[in-house]
Amino acid sequence: MGTRTARTPREGWRTQGSYEYRVVTIGQETSRSDARRLLTEEAEYGRWELARTRLYAGGGRKVWLRRKIIRVQSTL
Image 1: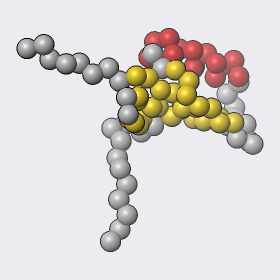
Image 2: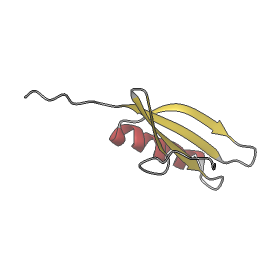
Image 3: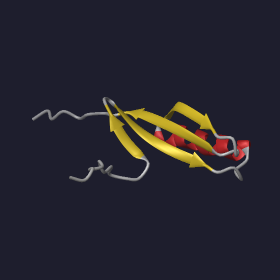
């Protein structure tokens, strides 16, 4: 038997509990101000909030963003 991997709807997106997660990888050639601008736009327009950040030795960054999943209930 082989191992099975779970597929996500879009690359870099995950859902867990009542939050939806998105993983953004920022290369080492991206400046801090450009990275800040990118994350600010994601937070402002996409309603994402910062969940976790990881800085690698080479200068690359991996950022986990999350937002609350809004479930709509039928009123009919």
